[in-house]
Length: 243
Image (cartoon, rainbow, N blue to C red; front, top):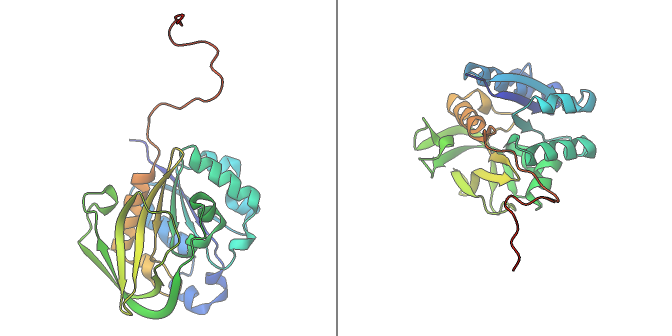
């Protein structure tokens, strides 16, 4: 069995600036996510913003079947050339899992074609994630409801295109609702946006959150279908007949 090749990309700034975040993720959020995905049988590498080419060289991306993305403080520091490189790989079939504040990344906005803006409040509220498409592969093995004791609130309107499938939706203690598990296809690539993951809460240590991300990686992995071709085709498949 060939294992899916995953790259977990993380800005890796909060963990080095904020002692609260350092205590929760001493090696970085990417390290926690990578460990959880390896335990699910994936082959995982990590990459961070301050590496050359943000760790996303042509060589790395050519060996990446699914890219997991977390960013927040430094969306503007991600080079446009790297954004275009990653976008091209998604359109060619690489899966993309965008986490939490990655909704405002250059990459996600480029793929969605909208502002991707929303309402937010950081108050450590309860988040209840409801599985509203239980037959979807991303929902496999999940309970009907995932409760997260403390999270940042994201509220509608979330300025995104209507999801092709909405797998998860959130309710917060302040009363807001949010589309938290959104599936898209762009070109040949599958994209999943997953809302939870504020840096000052231990969300990515939660087994059910890890399960959603692992399921999403499996779902987003490229298939084995034919490679499409484009452009001028001088020779017809069958002889042309005069009208």
